[in-house]
Structures are given as C-alpha cells and as structure tokens.
Length: 313
Image (spheres, rainbow, N blue to C red):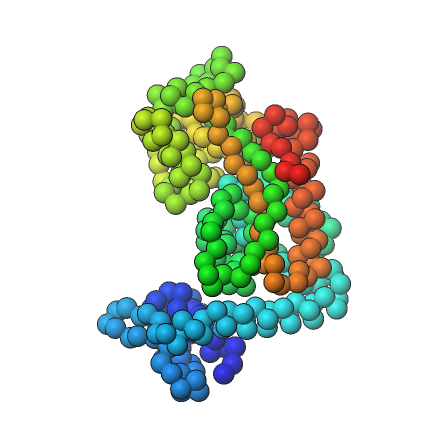
C-alpha cells in the first residue's frame, strides 16, 4: 500500500468515476485502474462496486475511506513539519474561502500575509461553505473561512470553529444611479420592486436572500442572474440594477453606493474553521493571526464599515 494508491482510491470514491478521477489526477485511466486493482489485491477485498457508468463503495471501501484520508493528512503533516524546520522562510498555507470573502477579507489578508512572509506559498480554494468544510475534513485545507455552519457527519474529524466577523447585508447600486437616491434604508419589499442582479444558484448568499424573499412572500424583479461576485459588482456599477451583498465588498469600490437593508435586517457570521485533531503549522498559525488582524482593521472606523461589520469576540 502506498500514498499514490490511497490518493487514487479517494479520488475515485469522491468522483464516482474512473475517467473523471484519472483526469483530475493527471493519470492515464489504465494506470489509475492498475493502482486500484493492486490495492484491492493487497487488502484482499474489493473496494468498489463497478456497475456500468457508476462506481460506488463496497463495505470494505467505506471502512477504508476515513483511514485513507487520515493517512494522507498525516503524510502532509510530515511534509509540513519539514517546512517548519525552515521557520517562516518557506512552506505552504492552504486557505479556503467563499467567493464573497475572496473579494474582501481574504484579498486584504493575503496581501498583508505575502508582504510579511514572501517565501510562503499560498494556495487558495474558492468554494461554497459546505465544500470547504468537506475539503478541510479531508485534509485538503489548513484553514477555511466559511459563512454557514453544518452538522458534521459521523466520519468527519472534529473541527474547531472560531467566530471572526458579524457582517450586515446591504443593497448596492451604481453611484451615479437613481435607484437608491434619497434613501437611508430600504426594505426587502422595496428591493423586490427594483431591477436586481442575482448570484448563481449554489452561492451561500443567493440561498440566504432567496430564503428571505420566500419567507416574506416576495418575488424579486430579476434583470441578470447566474453571475459570480466580480460580475455582479461590475453589472451593478454599470447601472443594470441593484444587488444584495455583504458590506465588506464595498471596500475600495467608489463607483458603488449602498444603503442598509431593513425589515428584515439580514446579517451573516464569518467563521474560521480548522481541524481540531491536526497541529497547525507555524505558517498556518501566522495566516490565522493575519486574518484576525485584518478582520479587526476592516471593522474599524477607518474603513467606514463599522456600522455594518463587527468583530466577534
């Protein structure tokens, strides 16, 4: 049994498909199949049910999966320990964050971290909160910034959650637009009557705002939907409509105006998730400190966001 075999096994289990797993690992499919076959022979058990076009885990595969994930995480820890010998002059930090945080808190934190530790390699995963938690549990991340919490599965390692910020949602429009002119607040019902730019389905923020509209019995007037954060902000800057966004995205956005959302007031909590059973490297600990310091800075009066963003003590 070797790490390459375990990596291939986990990827097939994750994708449910040999061809997709081979492509993801940049392997020829026959090579991947040989690795899995050799692993099964060494263990004396089949790991997958191989139905036409669909691959599922056998009982033996289900038993092996959490152990294989821990073994790969341990191997990564060994590599990181070697980097530790060089202090913070080299190493790697694998940070996950939701798309809405990548254009605000994460962009500021990574910029600050790189200035302080230019020798540390930074790897960023931009996904929804659920996918980030799963990647963290699987050993694919050192830490993750999420905006939702989930009940851990029975096989998921224990995670440590630390509150970072409480952030209000605001409504934005182009600075030269009349859409929000003369308003110092706006209700959800009033937002529903304005042309609106929506994120794509699967965004944590899209799910939260849709739930608020449905709870109030409202249907938004949609101009554009299915966009990523950068596109939403650009569409709004060009006057296509309004959007409901986290307040922190307003940093360095002079072409946008905003008003607080009221009736109902919507907010979200940004949390930093780490593995409770894995010792953090010095580089990961330094990144955590940088994120917390950046959060405090963004919530200060200097940014003009103090009425919308609060540090979670």
